[in-house]
Length: 124
Image (cartoon, rainbow, N blue to C red):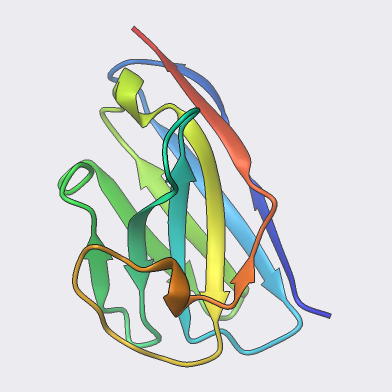
């Protein structure tokens, strides 16, 4: 059974940092990513990483967020630095058992498995 479980969300002030984690199990995931959805907005791709470590970022987070993975622990991370109020959203972990590299925008259709999400709230 495939499971993606996010953790690390919470409330933080603008300019602060958070690290999200996603514990994956049930399959070999080659392509993994983070998406977010703010109230009243469509879900958008934030960052993605392939099995070899190739990364893609949304323009809005480039230079502030870093995606990484620990294959030995089957865990995906998103280090969020210098967060802004507009980063407030539900953050979702996504994964797929096909490897790929894609340019931004990161597509939802590239991922077959999804977590339940973790809320991030940034106050000004």
